[in-house]
Amino acid sequence: MNDTARALMLGTLVVIAAVALLSVVSGCFSERSFVMRAADVRMLPARSDEPAAAADVSPSQRTDARTWLRRVHREFAGLLPHHSRPALVTQDLCDADGRPTDVFAHFRVNPDTLHTLAGNCRGIAFTAQAAGAKSYIETPAPDWNGFEDVWIPVGGGLELCGRLGLARDEFGAPIVADCIVILPGLLGDNGVLRTRDIAAGLRANGFHALALEQRGHGQTERRFGHVAYTWGALETGELLAVSEWLTAQPSVRRTGLIGFCWGANHALLAAWEDGRGADDRGVPERLAPLQRRAGSGPHYSAGIVACSPVLRFEKLIEATRREWSVLKHPVYDALQDTLEARSVRKGYPEATRSLRRLLEMDAAIDPSLYDGIVDDGIHYVRLMPHNGVPVVAKLEAARVPVLIIHAANDPLAPAQEIADFMAPLDNPNVAAVILPDGGHVGFAPYARRYFYSLLANFFHVDRGPAAIPPGRGSAAAGRE
Image (cartoon, rainbow, N blue to C red; front, side):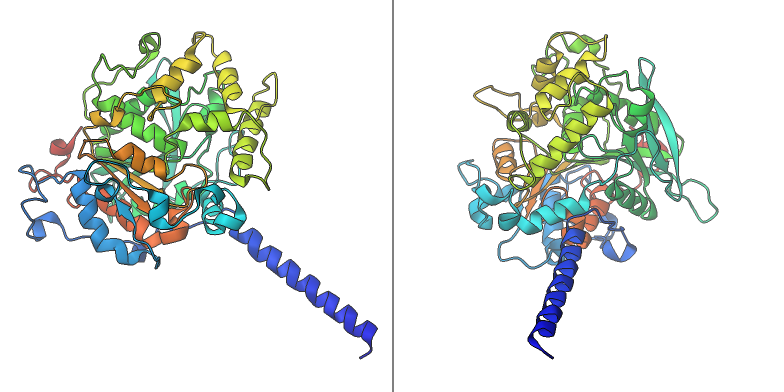
């Protein structure tokens, strides 16, 4: 073989290797399905089948969320991939004096490089694998086996689209069970594979499941595009209406709620809205008359799970005032692509990549809203102080179990915010775990068995923190 032929062959091999590598890498940074299989779920023994320490169980046979998480994480920690640093649960998130733990120091993470591929390749890959790749607004998402689309009235003529799957017995009849509501991430819909996988998995494990599209999302947006999405200001009360609608169904005992990303913020706000007083300072005076007040409760009494919440939402508002590229900050770039796509599809005056500007243009399409609702809405959804502006400790009012799941290498919502949020919180109903890996909402790609086992046990009728005491598991006894 002469030098020319050898050079041509070498060049061909290099091209083939480069194409193969590109194919592998691109696959790592695209949405994937992570089915919730029976083999992925490990169940704890039923409460009635095991002796329980007095410190673990209250007189009503319920365990507070923090005690429950400590016990369950101890059981399931071996399901996590090996890592040099252990996960942090609630009690690890502050020291004896109540100061927040330095999360990044514990996990040996450099927060300044979390947004880069070089500094956080795994976190960004897990984020991409769990994120929706397509939008389904003009047409519904592909059908799911065993699910049907329903419309849920929430007041004022507005109905929300949901995809409902009922668990059934061997004869095909719906069983009496808890129904878990699943919310997508920012402006997502029921085309997200993560939502489908979890909904189908919960149904296979004996739960009813409802994948919900709120205002501005999916088929609800297609049918009610004239109704503004207020990013939680009005949607939170509507989530409570969904819980009430579900528990009025003959086969639904209680409801639970899972939210991802901004859906996780919605979930946390629902826990607050359910438990807060009528004069709570977290509700601006002008906003209160527009809100739907909850009926009797509690709502989502089977529990609420918030996966990768964006606790300092206003930092995103500030960050998106400038332009980001995929090379500079791939996560912010993807967020801005979502914002821009919405502004174009809605026919707004400008194609904006600014979150603040999108909030303003969203509010402007609805004549029932008032000037200034954007600022009032930000006040309502604020969960942490920002630029010296104080905040009501909203989750002190939560009366149902709440579990926050986060990752140390989240490239969008820094994990330190979880410790800062939890350290002063004195409500045992609210627990949190920070995992070593998983990026933003990428818990199934990172640790499928741990994540799915945690969800299945958290909501279980006699294994979770909201366990129904023995002898009270009937439909009537469990109604909200």
